[in-house]
Image (cartoon, rainbow, N blue to C red; front, top):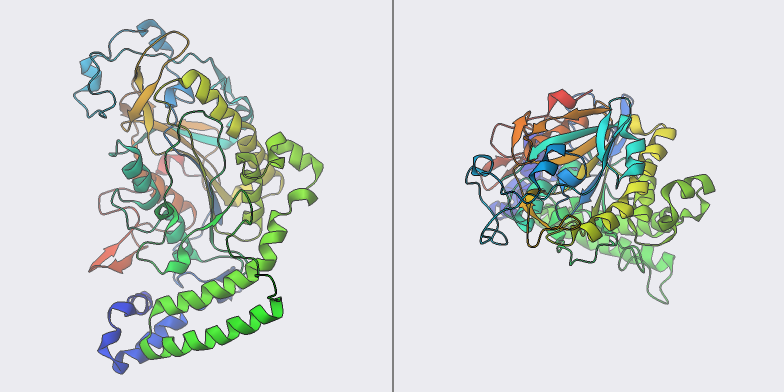
Length: 485
C-alpha cells in the first residue's frame, strides 16, 4: 500500500510515461483524499494508512523553539564550581581542540564566565533552574530536562535547519510536514501544521527565520506549515476582496476545482491535487480562523494564567494561548519560534527580557493543557538549535558577559504524552562544555518526538532521488528510551 502511495506522489517525474501509468496514478491519488477514519481510531483527515505504527502516547505536539541558542548554564545546567574559575582560561583539556566560530576563534584567551544568576531546586525531583524562570519552576514536576543534547552545526542557519528538517542542507521537509504527511489532521477546518513567529524583547538583532524551517521540501506542498501572523490578518489573502461574497467565492472555487480536476485527469500531477485541497482549506479557514483568533471568550482565569502579554497580539503569551486553541481543535503540530536568544554580548540585560517573555506563558500552557485533560496526550517540546560557551565572548565583568555558539552540549526539555515527568536526563562536565553521560543527538530528539506520536522513525520514509529519505537521517539514531514513560 505504501509503495502505491509513494508511486502516486512521485508521478510528477513520470507522467511522460503516458496514459498507461495514469490508471495506477489515479488509484494512488485516491489515498490523498482527505477523509478517512475507522471505529478503532479517532477520525483523521489525510495521513498514511499504515500510521501510526503502534499505539501513540501523544496525539498532538507543540514545539516552543527558542531561536538563537539559549545559554544552558544560565538556565538549566547548573555549574556552581565555575564561580571559582571566574576569568581563568578554559583548559585545553576541556576544549580538546574543538571547532570555534570565527567570532571568538581569534580571541587571545577564553576566560570563564560563571553564570551570574542564582539557581534553585524545584519540584519533588529537585530540578535545578535559574531564578529567571520562576513560573517554569512551578511545573518542574511535569518536565523532563535533557542537559546532554548535541549537534554538529555551529552556526545558526545550518543548525536551525538541521534540527527542524534533519539536514543542514536546505530542501528537506520540516518535522511538522513529516507529521502532516504521516498522520494527517483531526480537523478539516484547519491545517495539520501551524507556525507562529511572535515578538521578542531582547535588544540585540535576532537571527532571520526562513520559510524552509516549516516547508514541505520534496513532500507535497499541502504539508507545509501555515504561518499565522501576529499583526493584521492572521493569514494573508484569507479574506474575500471587497465586492466578493462567500457565495461568489464558492462558485469560483467550484469552477476552478473542475479545471484543476481536468488537468489532474490528464497528467496525474499530485501537486494539482494539493492545489485543490489548499483552495478548499482556505475556504474553510475563512470561518475557522476568525473563531480561533477570538480569545476574548476565554475565561478570565485562563487569560490571567498566561499573563498580561496575552492581550497583546503577536506576543509569545498570545501565541501559546492560540497554540492550545489550535491543538484542541484538532491541529496535529504547532511550532512557535521565539527569536532573540543569540546573546554574544550584554547577556545580563537581554537574557532576563527573553525569559520574561516566555516564563509565565510556558507555565500557563502546561497548566492549561493539564487542567483540560490534554497534557497526557499532548507532547510539549522546548529548546533551541544549540547552546552557548562557558567562556566569555568580548569583555568579561562580574555583572555582564557574552557567550558564543556551542554545539557540543545544550539543554532542552519535554513534557506531556509519552515522556517521564519530573526528571533530568544526561550530564555535562563541570564546564558545561562536553557531554559526560547519556548523550542525545538532535536526531535522537526528533526520533523521540515521532515515537511519542506512534511513529517508528526508520519506517517513515519518502522516495526522493532514488533514496528512501527519512527525517532522522541514515546514521544510528533513535528514541531516547530513558525518558519515555
